[in-house]
Image (cartoon, rainbow, N blue to C red; front, side, top):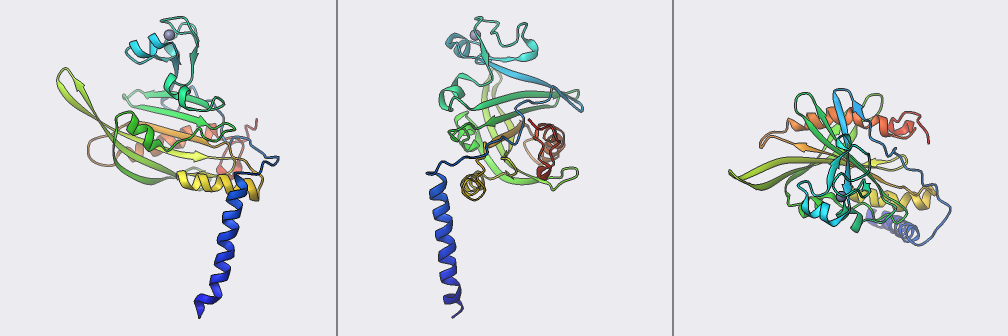
Length: 266
Ligand SMILES: [Zn+2]
């Protein structure tokens, strides 16, 4: 008997959700689409020095140079000009430029510290087409990584609720002069909308539709990733991720008190 009381209610809820999602992808209303982050990674952080990455789109540079047409901003005499061919440099690689919508924004920086630590940090901000963000698993595999483990960690954040971060453990085998070597890496990521954060690609897709209809908010989702090297065994690297996220994340959040951002409104 109990079943029959709830069943019609449940059906209505499911229909509402489906109708909302259908509307979300078909109706174009006046939407608020302010990004939740600033597209600028700090030059320095407590104990860390950042070095932004730039890419040359000239075929000779990306196919024939050691780093595949990748340059560090601090090494360049003239910022944004390729030292090998003299053409303009970009914030995304030629391969990324080829597959992503042209209004996608990108910023990448390699942070190093005095003890030899290295943290690659990137922000991808989706444009109007919303197809700028793919599941990271796909890209990692495309780059030759094997995915060993996936889980979520909670990073305590000062003065606000903790941040959930998705973590992928990777392994990649390199051929070197001394034989094969394995690089043990991690890739940590989360998504940020105007006032939403989630480590889940699917939750992001849901909020994209829901907020568009229910709140007239069209998220330009930012996809933030932090990656580096780990030991073959153990999870000590999780603390390294947490320590780094605690200092890199607050300065890039746009004045959103809900998510703990400062008031650097733009
Ligand atoms: Zn070049």
